[in-house]
Length: 230
Image 1 (cartoon, one colour):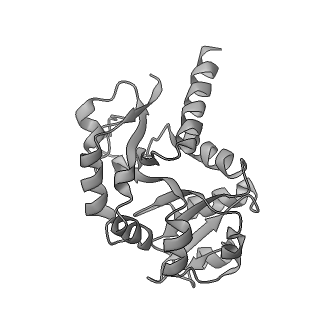
Image 2 (image 1 turned 45 degrees about the horizontal axis):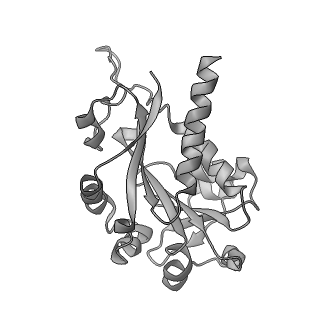
Image 3 (image 1 turned 90 degrees about the vertical axis):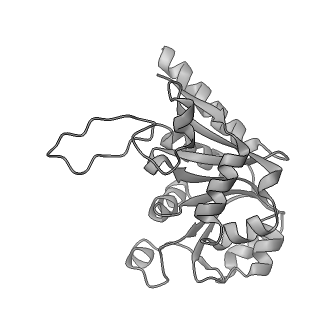
């Protein structure tokens, strides 16, 4: 069983995104209002034996990696073989260029959340009160992954950004205004991905103007296949 990348039906993905994320995150609310979704395509990374109809059951687990749960077991670990591919691609992307950033809106956190203080997470405050982690190669890979992991959960979305050369000033602002979101973050969004299949995979959006993050995903997949042959 090999992992492969599959392009998905745009309309099915679009309606799922609008229904689940439309007004829940400030990022998606502004992104959708600018009609930017139509400027890209959707993909997912799954095993090569997944049935086509299962690809669109975004809210359901156990279809990508079918499992048997014994009667006396109530919790099973979630399997997502593509996780390392996405994590590695995020790190590789950040360290390609000084104008590469990622942005993660944390749906659940508040400024007084214990894990924010205990782990010294660097955040910006959005107009809806959500925290937004804006990260570039000023952060170490371990710091990036720490922000990434602590934001995982309900409505997780990681945006892949290519920002103008003068965008470092955003890192020093405690608040990230709608003006900065609309004039820097949204125009600089070349991809984003969200958790689907009950944590068993990701739905990836890629701008047709810049598919550099998609290329990194494909490189990671190729490397996995080569390693598997050795």
